[in-house]
Length: 256
Image 1 (tube, rainbow, N blue to C red):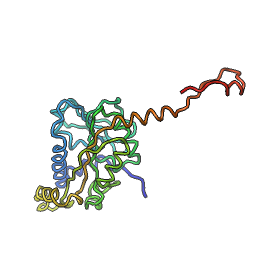
Image 2 (image 1 turned 90 degrees about the vertical axis):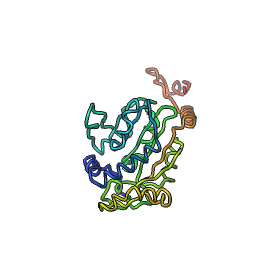
Image 3 (image 1 turned 180 degrees about the horizontal axis):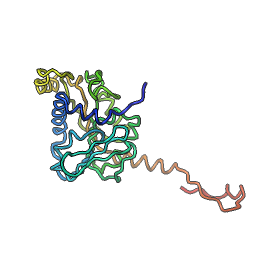
Image 4 (image 1 turned 30 degrees about the vertical axis):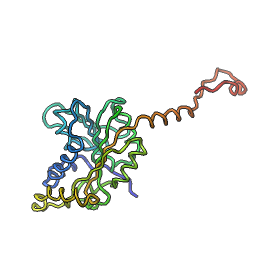
C-alpha cells in the first residue's frame, strides 16, 4: 500500500472555490454546526484544512486558530484581519498542554502516516473535558472512490473504524453523524438538489454518505493510569563516579 500523502493546500483551496466545493462546504458547515451549536468563550483549533468551516465560530469563541500540516502547506486565514494560521508538524503541535477546548480535524487524519501520533498530540493539547470532531471520507461512500475531489485521496474510514481508532487513543466517541449524500457531480441540477439529497440521505442512507463525523471526548483517567504504569516500569540510569569498578556499579541502587 502506498504511503498516505497530504493534498496540496492550493488544490484544497481551489476545490472549495468550485460550485461543487461551495455546496460541500455549506453542507458540512451545517452538519458541524448541528454538532457544535455554541462554542461561546472556548478556544477552538482547526487542524488540517479546516479554515472553510471555522468562520461561524469566530465571533462567539474566545479564540479560533488553525494549524496546517507541513506536508500540505499553508495559506493565510482569514482574508480580513490578523492571520490566525500557522504551519506545523502534525505530530509536534506548537501548543501548550491542555490549552484547547475544541479541535476540528478536517482533511488531516486520512492523509497522515502517523494517525495515532497525531491523535496523541491532539489529546495532549486538549483541556480536561475537551472535545475532538473528526471529519473523514467515508470508506463506503462514492466520494472516497473518485479522485476528482480531495475526499477521494487518502485513507477513508467507516464510522466504526474511526470510533475504534479514537477509543484506542483515549477518546470516548459521543456522537456520530454523516454528510454529503449527493454524488460529487458538477451538474447544476444535482447541485441545486443537494439539500434534498441531504434530507433523504440522513433519514435512509447514512451508510453511503461522503463523509463521516465522530465527536469524541478526551478521556483523562484512563490515560493517567497508563502513564503511571509506564512510569513505574521506567528505569533510570545514574552516572557513575569516575573510576568506579564494575562491582561498585552493580552495588549502586536503581532509582525510579
